[in-house]
Length: 454
Image 1 (cartoon, one colour):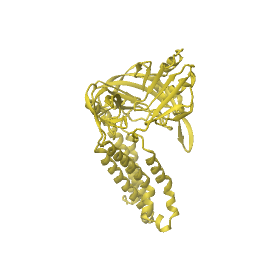
Image 2 (cartoon, helix red, strand yellow):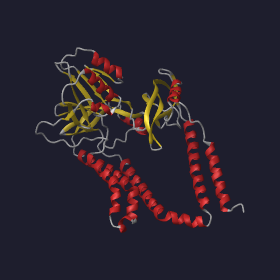
Image 3 (cartoon, helix red, strand yellow):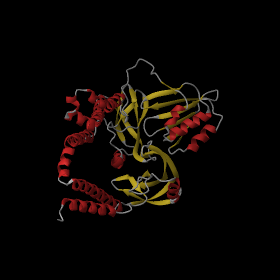
Image 4 (cartoon, one colour):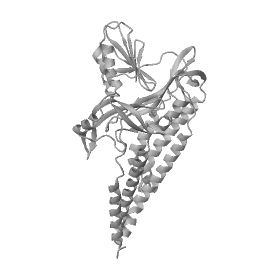
């Protein structure tokens, strides 16, 4: 987030910065406070002559305005909730979509990471319409097609919709004009997504901004490509390719120059990844068909021969062996990671609602966020143990863990050299040797049940 107040910009705002700015009255008419997210979206308030504030925001290219002025307390609440990714800020007042003025050429849909409405409707129809297969004649829903569709159809529709959307955007951008631009910012930004059933996470993404001139005006862009395959392990490569001050070529929508990208071709990995996902879904679908149609007859034949225990114990042993190998691999990888000096920037606890046995319970997680430098870029992480998701604790346990890392304390951070955003304060607890014991027991039971020992 970036907070701008009266021309002064704060790249790392906190709740108190917003509260002090709004409380610092009186504000003259035209006083402005602007809060921008890491993408193209932002929210802004402008003071009027009567002491109120006019609110407006942009969400995925669509402009909205408050239906009337709001007071200072409402403004603080809206901005603080927006800063903390709390969607309740939309309920603080009524917002009305802005109708574009003028008769100029119509701008196309803005390039965005969010799926378009038609794709959402298509995927939702595939998910919720699957049960309608059983309304069809029995020869249809008893066929392999119906079974394969129930297992993998909706996911295949989702993958195809994502690919189709990117191809449509790339085709539209292929005829966009281009303009010379310059990179004005190139750094790592920490995004804090939060789900409804887990603690807040931290994702490090490349934050690149650039300026260019079009139609006699200066514009600022932040989107790099249509595919947006620029984060994660690609973060360092993206920042190296677009350093601050570098000259670039910007492709922009002539009807809406703020809708722009630096790369208008879809990365080769996107269609290949979609093809791989579809291939996996096809395998899962036909595997599900085989299980439904043949599994019990296959098992019954062995069960009648007294081999049912052999099958189930053998499967349990294989699963346990795979989990053991996974823990061994994770422990080996984490132990070889380099370390960097870091500093704790936030320490406390966080509550969230989680589903357990069909009921909703309140769980707690330690919040230990720390920053560290890798290749001159500042990264953030909240991962304490490499092999722990950091949730599901009691309030006391979460507070005890957080207390080990007080705010502003120096810490040693272990990070993945191929993806510096993946880091932890503590190395894995070790290899889960007990899983090897479970594997041995399962295989021994299978051998005994098979009559191998006579």
